Length: 161
Image 1 (cartoon, one colour):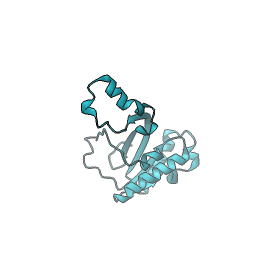
Image 2 (cartoon, rainbow, N blue to C red):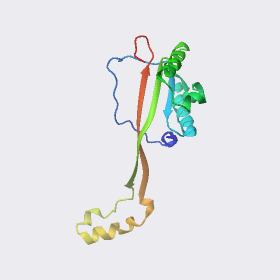
Image 3 (spheres, rainbow, N blue to C red):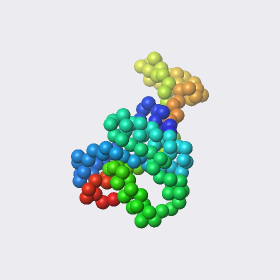
Image 4 (cartoon, rainbow, N blue to C red):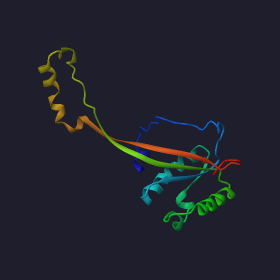
């Protein structure tokens, strides 16, 4: 997840917005990154809150809000509701949760095309022009595609926690 913010080419491919909340604009958000690696979670949440703060949204990391005993144990519904009530009392109006749903390793060919493409009408010419690319590792880009699901939950009056 930390690598996600170091990449220059991040792209949103799908999104869905609940039609019941067409104009919900949160002002105070708790950011939760779901991963068992505490250091990765802290780094991910920190980068996320920096981006939200740059957009004039007050955001805080879950590692700052939730104590270790809450984070490292299974909690009952009553304990979770008590924590949410405390957050609402301190002015938070939303929780944003991000979960990595999958990682796909991809490889793409990035070598230059032969300048003789128009002459390569026969197999032998084509094969000779491109046979070295198979052995040259620099012609291939290896990259990971992360599938991340992010949900924003509202704490506004009348919302179902």
